[in-house]
Image 1: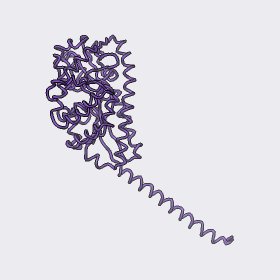
Image 2: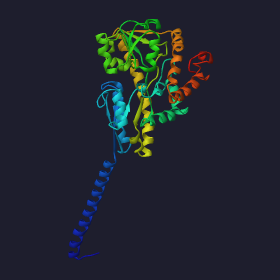
Image 3: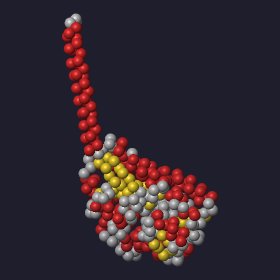
Length: 373
């Protein structure tokens, strides 16, 4: 033991100095690490086509806000509702291609005029009508890989499909059969869907979801397709229409029963991302797809009770209507499939699946004499 008081007095300050230096060094290191992490964080601006205040956008916003934590602070998703950055669908597409936005959450069908194959990347009239069938085609039959090849040509990366809902029709007058479509002024998304409705005599127009309510209110259109009951209730459709059109029991829609959304990002932004983060985003899209779908289905059940209390009446098409719908739709399938080799490649996956006995939607006799087959 050192009993020399002078030694004790000189040792204590020295130890304190060393401790102070060590703490300062540790704090500086922590601050430096935090600064590096902040600098390393990648921020993506992503716009959805969901309007603010709808269940769809609330779900998307929550998902985006969780990405920073899930990525350990390395990736941040800053989300925007419809029209916040890009004013319409065309500018949304171009904004992601140019990098003004790094990503978008659209209805995949919107790109039928730019990417003809996109009409086959979401449900179409009388095509596969169960959500799991689309997941099977994307994730186990090569459709995801083929889709990414197609989008790459446009400087885009298709991350994956996001299950959403069926689309239904709200109208001012009842539509009880396909015959009632004749002369109807109807909002639909365009492309193949519009052409099949036109084959039954409907007059179709395309417009964004946010423009539907005023068009119905003013009488510019007689009826409108949009998404499912939950969002359509929130958009106020019950205030300007009295009737809702469904397919046969168990099927809300015969023209877009599985209206897929997706996450698509700028290809350069995707390629700049660390492979581990790329895998995280892919995995999270699949998880979000299920949550998005299931939450909206629950809200649909609740919304239909509200429509009922508000006095709206549901009409259902018959199985005979479905058979006639498919008969008219098949030639239009092939018309779109033959627009280019990409569209045909996607469609070939689907027609083979629909003709397989496990699905059984289409038989060889249904295709006899179809132009372009």
